[in-house]
Amino acid sequence: MTGRRSPIKIRVEVAYALSRRQALIAVEMEESGTVNEAIQRSGVLAAFPGIDLQRAKVGIFGRLVSLGTRVQDGDRVEIYRPLIVEPKQGRSMRAQQAQQRPRRR
Image 1 (tube, rainbow, N blue to C red):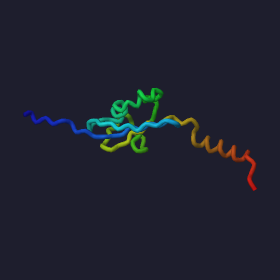
Image 2 (cartoon, rainbow, N blue to C red; image 1 turned 135 degrees about the vertical axis):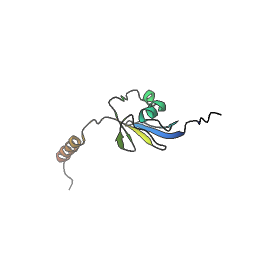
Image 3 (tube, rainbow, N blue to C red; image 1 turned 60 degrees about the horizontal axis):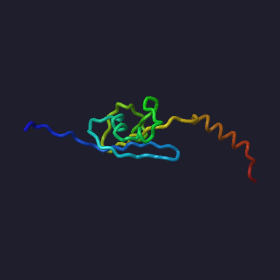
Image 4 (cartoon, helix red, strand yellow; image 1 turned 120 degrees about the vertical axis):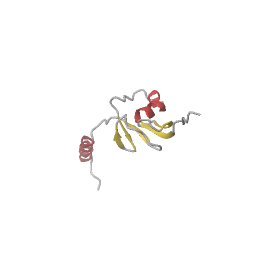
């Protein structure tokens, strides 16, 4: 016997969502795995070919991380879409639209 043990496996989820389509994919991987490895193993890049990991932001449970961040058992890796409108600009646009609508009495 060489005393060699098999690597410890963990489970993580990879999440990505468009306005009308979402994916939450469970992945089993070695405990030393990274965010990038979880995304690659999940198959989400094939299911959503528009994802550009070089430009997309990623996170774990809503906290921004890098692709090289190590994952832990039970983590949810999230791939974020780019914003279409900056939040400040969106609020301004909604306020302008509200001012143009007739008021109810």
